Length: 81
Image 1 (tube, rainbow, N blue to C red):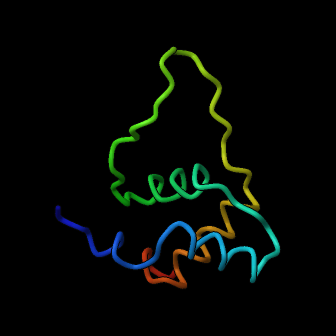
Image 2 (image 1 turned 30 degrees about the vertical axis):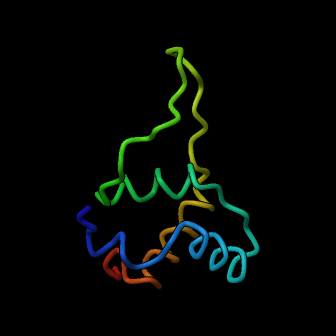
């Protein structure tokens, strides 16, 4: 299976730990996936999608989005602005 350069940088657990250590915020894998998708980091298809349509998916709060973006920059997964 091919791995993109971004996927080989840091795991979700490493990102969660970095965010917690540097900002004190706990972030979920869902929020990390949303931020990665926003920046064009390709994710694999989710294998445990809901069976019914119309389920509410929480959106990442702005403060957590900024913290995750900082972590992605730290791990060189997105460019520094």
